[in-house]
Image (cartoon, rainbow, N blue to C red; front, side, top):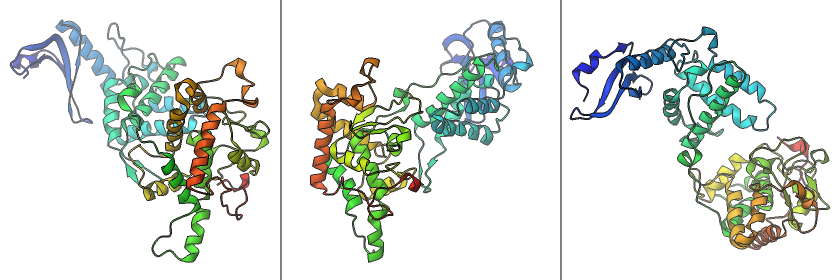
Length: 427
């Protein structure tokens, strides 16, 4: 409990100096603390001054007050206000960053992460925040606010926001502030650090076995007849699920991430499908590689025949997310981050690793894009024997799926009665 004489130390605005004491009045630390009430978080906050000197502690408190309450950047050495021109609004920095990153393939992820930050600025009346105002306490307030805002799917389904999703916005915000610092728009780099992924993310543990993968295909090629389904309604179920069927096929055959699976095309201008070599480049021509590396993968006979019969995109809609959600509900697949479209990739990796063994798992790592081929291997994907063991195992799994669900790798139904879809059909 705070001693009465603590109140006489120093106060400025809502900030005051105090000693950090235990309940019996003894000191936890000899260093003076800055204490204030955070209205957004609805709790007291404190920060150590790192000194026992009241005079130095007062300077620390003054610097914090000027920075947070009057929006002035302060010198870290002397605590004196710096020139007013150093302030750069966070909203302006975000706008500049988005323009500079517009051509990046990851812009689709960058925008929503930063949109969450701008929503926080608007909802909490912080639009006047400058880059230099964003410190650990500010980030803590953002984290607390963000965790209370659910994620709402296009279908209107709400789910709790994961800590890893919030931290992705924090990580992107740090990139924004450091970008502004690099352009000399601010005097300081980011004064906060995102939490490492292992602290905020939990790796999904569920993996589908071959029987469950076959059930997913059966959902598409042999739909269940619901109570009350008319003949006409039932007849439409299979065509309605054709794009989900295509997504399942290409995902099983390539182990690709969902975004890469959606973007597989046989259009020659994209330079992805090499029919003679039976090799598929998951990274189309003109798209820079990112940290989520897209490899060239070998394709077995069943999938090769489907790609040869296709003109343009194999999955001809922007996303099968809603169709996948419907299938997941029908098959009682786990939720809360354990399922989702990436489940196919995780399951294929798990099944293949068991069959490849650790000696040949290097081929699995290349299939997943977790291990890049060297410059000397640049021609390997178009030569016989490329990732032969990984292809052998993939074909084994496909054959087992076909045995449990005949027609799993037949040509999916389309609006044109079973023919392969063209790029013009892509929604």
